[in-house]
Length: 400
Image 1 (tube, helix red, strand yellow):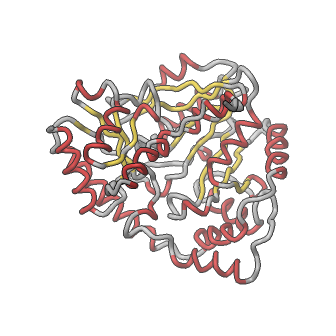
Image 2 (tube, helix red, strand yellow):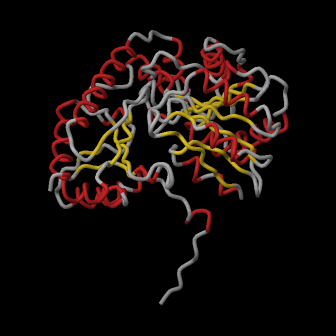
Image 3 (cartoon, rainbow, N blue to C red):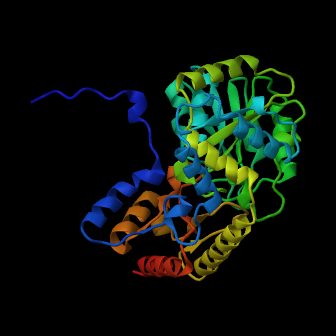
């Protein structure tokens, strides 16, 4: 028998709940079952939410003029300037030199963790949260500590919990706003309180993941960078969610560092960016068109998402065994399983729902073992008739 080569401990420890649950779904599809997939936040998988045509045209035009070679490692200058202008309109002075274009926000996170973290360092991230915030820091000898979002108060930040977990080893304090998976939108007062707390710890930088900022339904969302006068804030955003082009894999980080305390870290980030060459050049031109050209289309997309979201909340309210607080932004629902015989093992709930009723959602513990358990996350992106079919199946499952 041939002895297998060991996988590294860092790779073996990686979990990504959103896509891990796809594996059994694919097997069921191979058997001929039709699965209603509500697991991945990809608007292009559903009817009525296409990438804007002028962005696609700009992408194609870049290919037609052979503008698809290696680009500058930090991003094409026109796009960096357009992003800087967009961020500046949110209330802080952003220059093109403050912007770095990446292969989506996920690569931005990998680069930031590599540049900031050493063995023994900590990342303080909200619980629940997007899985890479938990998965990647351990690759650099660091650990992620979750701070609590209150499930009984619209998933608002629990500041007492944050304060109890802050120390000199916390290098990065994460704000996901609007939050994935809960959809909560932090108020300006909450952001101000977060910045005030970070001021006490001079080694701490705030990561503000604002990838869903254009899908705020509260009217109260503000840029974290615009609220900070001295604490460094690194804003993350990109083309995937609000510009409806997730497969293009173009994101960015914008650095707000009023006192220049991150100069050494920034040098490390630039070295890492140069070593991986560049983000997709033609896709950057597509994103540029989205930032510079007309944006009237976005209102229609927002209205469709909000209509579908409201319909989901209505359907959930009529199903015994689940409940959900109305999210303030993004396109997710973080649904609480209220039946105690089912809530203790939310992954089993999800897999049983998949195998028995062929609806695919994501277990809440995949977003936080402590603060997400007893929930599941679903997207509200499909047309209403598909959502109704999914809720009918969920209702049947709970009534079995």
